[in-house]
Length: 389
Image (cartoon, rainbow, N blue to C red; front, side, top):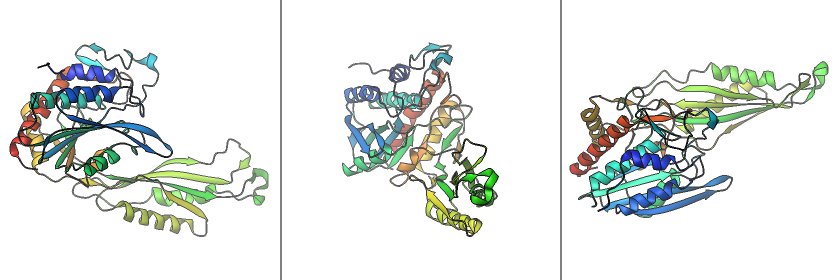
């Protein structure tokens, strides 16, 4: 039997593929080869959508029946920025002082490497005695997230798979490996407000119609809005104005339109639909007789929360046994691909310390890689030994 690669070797190999979203660069082909050699049935999926780049995805499974556990991750990474500022080239996967350096080391090729290493050790050349183990790997998490996990789940369901639990390997730990698992996320809704005016010379303002003051009245109302205080599981919903634009480089021209963008991270007091209705009402009240456009961006996501149960409890137990840390069950932070699993099965997120993700000199300690692999391995043993979803 060929000795499977360990987590450090897997990570170094994955980092070396320049998989800046939406390009794959060969990372998934490498994973497919490793998993197929271990007995996984591997399917490669390329999804397309008008106006967005084609994206490569991978779905691999082994075993049959329930319980069916799926690990979700992404091989795409954000651009490295100015590569001259890196201590080592961002795709060289250099090891120094017990750290592996490279773009994606933390977010999130490291967790993929750890889970694959743990899965291969758990399987030891054979399928689980009971149940199914799968990996859903996308190349679209750092991009528009249109041709990735959402479509990969739909394809798996169409092929007859039914998931009982999912782990997403995002870097959830904050200061120490294991200190945080994500059991939910707030929802996210983005919108654009546009107010039309009439262009003119500032010296003859009576001949123009300045849209900026009218937009400011709307934004003043929204920025002072209290949507709620909090809920038992989530922090308060929060609206942030993220952009105000008139497209006007001149000092002496009144613009013909003004627009603003906003985003709301919302808790379980709202759904995307009820929040949209509230915002439309607030904008209408502030606008008065002003003509405006209010457009909600596609891709709004609702909140989700995974209640205590086998998935959360077994993962927490594996973390505590390995690290001695009792993980906080958190719902903070931004969105992730976990939002696509919430409608089909319980889902949690757990991975490395996220301190250097998306930064120059992104790196992860080999000690954390070893511990995360152990945690995933212990979880797999307990989850499949339980024989229940």
